[in-house]
Image (cartoon, rainbow, N blue to C red):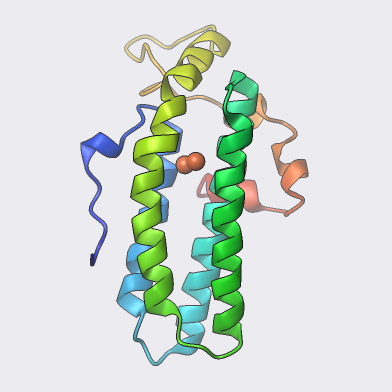
Length: 175
Ligand SMILES: [Fe+2]
Ligand SMILES: [Fe+2]
């Protein structure tokens, strides 16, 4: 597998989630481009950014599932946690000087799409129902969670505090 190419069947129909998933895919593609670069500093940066963004996405997703009262939040969190642990151990080997870029790229690219297609798709209906419920004043012409702008920062005021990482929320929303 070379570059990840987004396809419509990966969409959950939750605009913010789909945007974040596509952003992770972009990071993975940048990692692919740099995987055999002699510029270790650039490679180190993209590995750190990919891991960081993925972790932020997981925290966002878990908060959303929690708010939506998703039954399988526990197992979903566990899957995220195990995956983060694998990434961290590869990062540690990278820091120790090992050549891990290919292995990391393979792991990320296989894992992401398969996780989205199975575990993430499984929560889509519950979350959409929740978002349609909390946003009591849908704008005209944007009747569902897919197209409507939802102010997640208002919805999850505790999110930034929970992550204890200053600025990560701003980064997640691309500001
Ligand atoms: Fe996800
Ligand atoms: Fe997930």
